[in-house]
Length: 169
Image 1 (cartoon, rainbow, N blue to C red):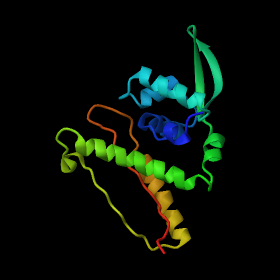
Image 2 (image 1 turned 90 degrees about the vertical axis):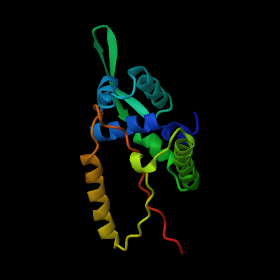
Image 3 (image 1 turned 180 degrees about the vertical axis):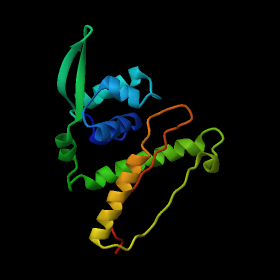
């Protein structure tokens, strides 16, 4: 098995996982319909990588017009297995480095225009109780779901990363 971070932090695989997280159980065709801006063959290749590494599992198979249609689900047990306190710092570092690489490629690319492309960094300190923070996270989750549209002409993928960092002492 490859490093979990190499598997999970790929942008296409992240979108597949996010799509399944919202849709629960879906076929590859249904995933392809939701993420229609990525070629079907590319999606299938990434789904295979997720299946080969037990990040996704097949929960049912059905023969349709001579081909096998598999219903997929996230294998949360496998993901949780890698989300341990022992490797938390490594996971955070891999996450930050993947984001850094995206910014590095963007700013080294042709004609970067952060204002036009709506690129920004923001850091906000919230003073909340645990209950207030839980409420904030619930509302934020709802807001992210509300704006999690399917691809269509005029829409582009926007990579939003939200981090709750430990308090600096």
